[in-house]
Image 1 (tube, rainbow, N blue to C red):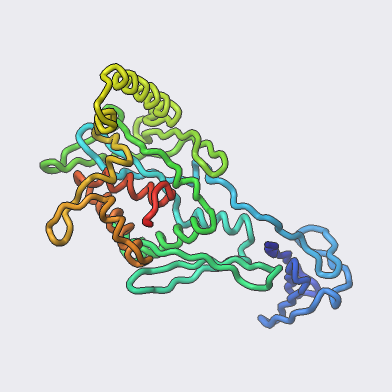
Image 2 (image 1 turned 180 degrees about the vertical axis):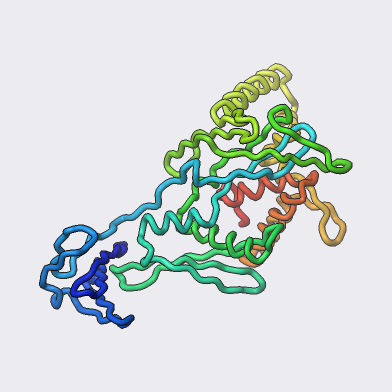
Length: 337
């Protein structure tokens, strides 16, 4: 794919745009555009912005373009669920990050977005101009409503998901489960069994390799202390896993199930999350694995993703399992089929 970038300047007091690939030129005068093929643009032109000569409508081309990785400043942090003994965090990108990266990579005039509603779901379409094919290439996805400003939140979420479809910020799908102990933040009980944290958190360092997060550091903005370090967390988990494996070996369990580590608060495995049961509309208790298995159509899968998102936001006893399954589906660690 060859995507066009543009050059802008003035020639005889007229705005001039040159488009790569197609070799065409547009001259704007009094808001009217006139297009010329490159063989009609043989004379040299000097631009105000920088003294560069363009012949035959030639402009720099973007070939094999690649969206850059997210930086710590691009990533936001919010509390996913809060308990008496700690809380879990989610890292995410803002819709403005998608717009900034699109501007940086393909140019402000070479992409556009639009919205449409399909069966009650709001879809955002991001299109990028392909000058090699002389057409717009589109990718889209739907969003979910937020707790505040539902319509605006849904539109923003749809745009971010469409950005994921283009590969912008896709490394966020590899984010680890982030647990912060209550000793590293301030948690208060608002009502019986309902906890909240007013502290703010941010990403202070992040390393990405091949679109995978390999290191992540998060600080508590209120105290300035590091509350999560990915490598340290992995090392601790590895040591813990090694101790459990040794213990299991000594115990010589009678079955594989007995060898599985027991679930701890804030530390469910994916298998445990899939086996977690929730009440259905009929009152039956169904596991998340059973919920997923009946989702055959795109609409059913979209509804399931919304259902999981809502359960996470409820901050109930089901939130942790739903969060883990939601992430596994997004990263394609598991699938609906």
